[in-house]
Amino acid sequence: MALIDTPPTDPHLGTISVTLTINGEDRRLDIAPWTSLLDLLRLDLSLTGTKKGCDHGQCGACTVLIDGRRMNACLLLAVMQDGRAITTIEGLAENGRLSPIQAAFVDHDAFQCGYCTPGQIMSASALIEEGRARTRAEIREHMSGNICRCGAYPNIVDAIEDLLAQRGAGQREAAE
Ligand code: FES
Ligand code: FES
Image (cartoon, rainbow, N blue to C red; front, side, top):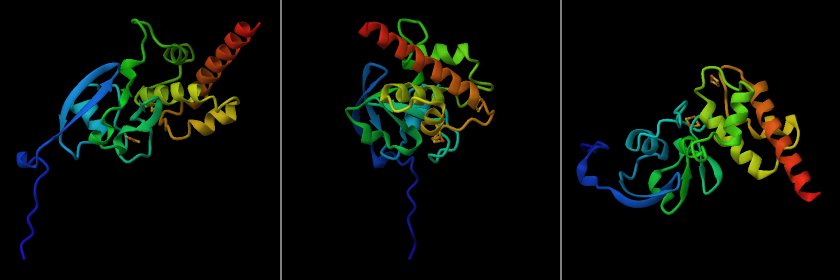
């Protein structure tokens, strides 16, 4: 019996309409059902700040925020995100200024080639909001899903630790 192999580009398979809020902007999109969120962002929407490293959920280069939670975009089907808010590295800057975590990465030289950096920053921004890391060991543990081939880990931890300290000082001042 002959097997029929339908190529993924077959136009007769159709698309699915979804609405996503991407970096604060509502987008109605017709998406092929097999499209990963990572490919949607990079290939269809030209948001190439989100990187493809392993494409298998192993490196964290594709980390984005979905409703504020950090997720690997390579492991998610775009059509399954209907109604959700996606934040990519392009959406972190505020009024044309680097966000505090982006500025901390610059201040601490927390990158070399920069390929992992968008994923590191997205993950770090969520980690700070999660409030789960207070020590360097906890920062390392909760950032362990983001791999850096250049080995910039000490500076990445410095950047996150510095921002956590600034946040803590700000909260103490507000309470006084
Ligand atoms: S590209 Fe998604 S985890 Fe590596
Ligand atoms: S800065 Fe090069 S992989 Fe992290």
